[in-house]
Amino acid sequence: MFVYVFLGLYITCIGLGVWTDATRMKISNSVSIILIAAFLLFAVIHLPVRLAILHIAVAAAVFGVTFCCFALRCMGGGDVKLLTAISMWIGPLHILPYLAAVAVLGGLLAAFVLCAKRITCHSGRINCRRFMKPVRTWADTGRVPYALAIGSAALVHTRSVFGPWL
Image (cartoon, rainbow, N blue to C red; front, side, top):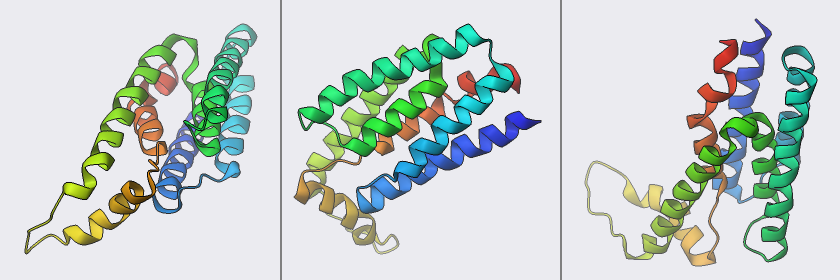
């Protein structure tokens, strides 16, 4: 029964991180802190100690690599923290497919943002300018909200995270 509470918290935190990154280009520290604290509680209830340690080790490895990306100004700090927190949930069995999904979705997002200046909207029914305004802002500033890719890949892998308990 508690699994559904953790599932709801997981999805809500990911959604909040994606929304704030897309709208404000910032991810609140509370999102990552809640994800990590929820995982630790989930691990105490549901995981053997060795598996919980492997999940934490995966998150530490992801943090190490993404921190280097942050130091090189390739990633934002919020993206590093969000990716680390989600990687703790994903664990050792599914981390490589998850990171591959993040890479593919992030590349598609970056390509879309690069093309955003050339996209023109000619539709009477859809207010395309309203949709394209944040995308054009991302293109003008040269910043891409990678939480969209990080969170989308996490939602795709939700079944692999919670599947054994549902």
